[in-house]
Length: 485
Image (cartoon, rainbow, N blue to C red):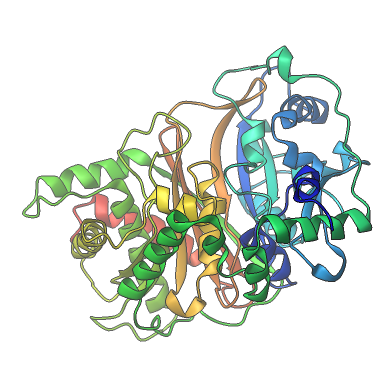
């Protein structure tokens, strides 16, 4: 009989949680399970090239081992896959160069992102990519990133975008973090099977996880995580007890995408918030509420323009995995996360009333304990402030498409410039993946005085996503003009 000390002495690579593994198992051609970002930079006088980008990444990925690891399946799927070092890691495969034809317009940038982002990442390699996209108008360039959701848990790994930028110009990694990288030997098939058996001994509930298909991973990490899962399920039961209303936003989707960017001014949202505070409704309205009201106004105009039936009580149900705390974030991320399901009142013709209703609904959920806080989400699925768009997408993907019509992730960024080397980032746009049956995902990021939207849509279901983009701009203008349009 094998002594228990033997099992304790066997060291194995990190194993994917059931939630992380589910993003690999559920991925198919129409739903690539990675998130992206589009960061636009003003180049320094000396310029910025691929060699500089590679140097930045080489200096920094050592602090996050996942970027040089790949997924290895266990024979027979006796256990979840493991992370192993890529012994043939090739940085040049992951960091790529592309250019737009002159004049490098915004439309051409959007077309590039629409083509590149839907392509699935290579499972045989570490699950991330970065494109240096040159040739934008005014001599600017963009960094376009892709990171798989299985890699991003907010604890062991972040989105690759966070490796690229720093609050200081020409920031360097301390010497102690530099040095040659030596990959660990990958385990053999026999060792992987042995490791699976070891995990059964160390963690018997792993068997339950496998039988349940990874849906109840929280049950294996103790009472605290189970309570967190209960809180999240309770939220869904209370705020989305009925299926989401029928909407053209919920339909079968294909493999192709359209992506639209929108740049707005953060001061406009603050102005609307300040105006509302002086009005007859002295409720606690956040900038996040104003953003949601802007999205609601844009969706209303878009639906009417399509000839969709929009009555006084019509709503679009939004899954809002993140929330803004305060109007002047000084760090990369807010320190709290809330997951809410909110009915956006697209049938309400008054912009100010739409805002009042959204603010009331958001506040009611939080005051009644119907929104799930950051600590609960962290216990449930590694939900933590870093890489919130990615983690928000993880949560949205785990929920049934019948519970909501559209996901809106809103991540507050720093209100001071960030740099890639000497190049200053002037704007940043999220690319949030589509879940099955979801024709649209809205990502929003505030940064350095701006609020930047990325609208990711199915190419066939939403050929008019650019119309929705303009409708969102118009809806913000309505609110800033007094909200009675």
